[in-house]
Length: 159
Picture 1 (tube, rainbow, N blue to C red):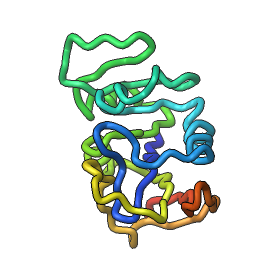
Picture 2: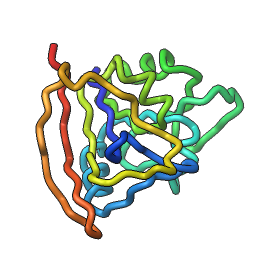
Picture 3: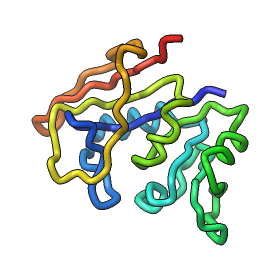
């Protein structure tokens, strides 16, 4: 199993506010779609609820403590361990939210981070801090949209 995380973060690891992304860039959405298509995506219930629908061309797994939750086109599990068991032979992308990222960080092999040269003091959800000395950093692309610069970065865990 390969476990990657994918997120767009501000200067202070900001992810979102009020269950929505802070930053919306067309090229970043395209990067997300192209990077995760054909893989399994794992997310928390609130992240799923922020999406317009189940993500197409991906196996969708939603973590929720609500045992009555049913989502057409998605598999529901109750815990991180259950999610790991469900997708033990898959190429997995963790797509949020903040608590799910924090719990999966120790399992991740790769981090696909869109590092945005902006901040959002009103943010209420953050990507977890991690020791960057334990990861190899590779710049995949650089962009500027709507006057905001950002980079797609791949962090690979150093064994």
